[in-house]
Image 1 (cartoon, rainbow, N blue to C red):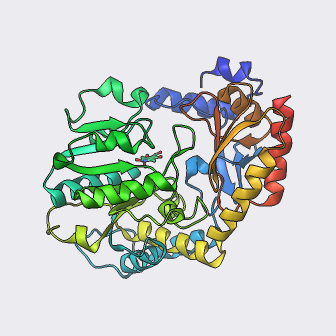
Image 2: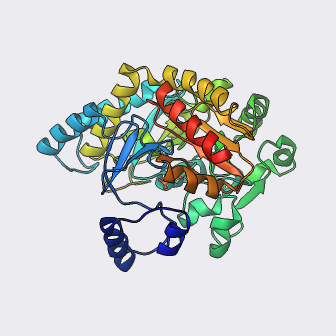
Length: 402
Ligand SMILES: Cc1ncc(COP(=O)(O)O)c(C=O)c1O
């Protein structure tokens, strides 16, 4: 964010912030419009800038800090792991990798049999698309208008947002059919014979927390199974308890063939995963896929420790209760409309552009997200969020909404 816009939005800029902003802007490729502060540390629901100002993080560190910032169990586990072994690749067996996979499979859909660890959400989706093509022997993919699956060329090919894709067309030429999210008839109108996969997010988060409902997902599951099409759920935002159940399809009794996870799976350490059923595992041979860093010991310790916290602190149940509370409390804010989403992935509108709301909230020390829909403010707090935090959020929103 240029200096002028920071000032315009009423943020007093300290010398230390100005310095760090300039240092980054001189040396880094500018691809993000940034918050007007430089961060020094985080603890639980809060992050602190270089001047010591606290921000209550309802954007959850970009949907990543699912167990809060710097959870003590994660910090201790990682510190121990770093002292023992920082890295070796998939060429070696690692006890911590097996333990992370075992814990993840226990939380996942019971239909899932195998896990492949990678480093980012886009890579998890790349792996899912490759596996679907390998398994079906087909090439085409059906994806949703309004979807977001990553920034690599293959994942942009199935991303249904013009804003991200159009500058890079042709992506993977002609390989994707985009259909409206929630429209089963549009999928049935396509010839199923050449379709390898349908890929979709159970809740379209970047589009503004858009949902489609159980009837659609059940019909999609029946149709894809009948035609031998892989059903891929991108649960990069909805997985790991965010929606109030471990994975979103569980709300509707629908399990995909392949599911991808990233964001909070390692509590902030870059790690992601792709899981698949036994049926889809068949046919994957040594050499079909690979990664140097995916499944390394630090990343796997991060997954193991994060899942331990989710289990020990019963964060999935907590997320469900807090999601209900959050939606009810948001309804108290004058002018609020269109509250949507699931659990702790929440969107809503106020009678001002979402970016203005975001700037005004930052000035009050509360971080919220925006979306591709200019009206929709998005909340993705840590699953550890408490009632007191919701009080602070709602109070600030009421002031901002006036
Ligand atoms: C639903 C979804 N899929 C895929 C991705 C891409 O993940 P990453 O940025 O880790 O590559 C994101 C990132 O925001 C996402 O929200």
